[in-house]
Image 1 (cartoon, one colour):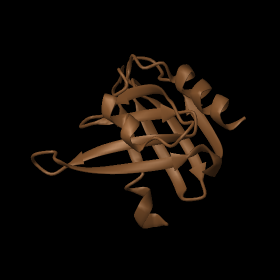
Image 2: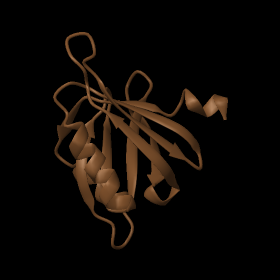
Image 3: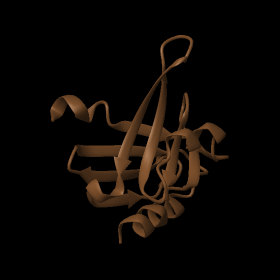
Length: 122
């Protein structure tokens, strides 16, 4: 489990339009709800899962896709950004796959993120 913890940490930079090509991997009845820019690609919330696209290599042509079904999330926590020295909000997800940490840059609404997770799980 310790080996996967370093892999399962993402940073969301800003909200962005939902990428058109995401429809290629959605299943019947699944719809994209919101998308966030990561440093090199994007994270997409659907009504069934969180999809994180991770461009790799120098050219970015190699793309790894992480798919986290909401049904695998056991618990989550959100922490808003503090003041001057604490500019990032954080979301932590405890799942059957392990612990996942999501850093959220200033300007991204962590409470909207919290509500997206709650609506999907509860």
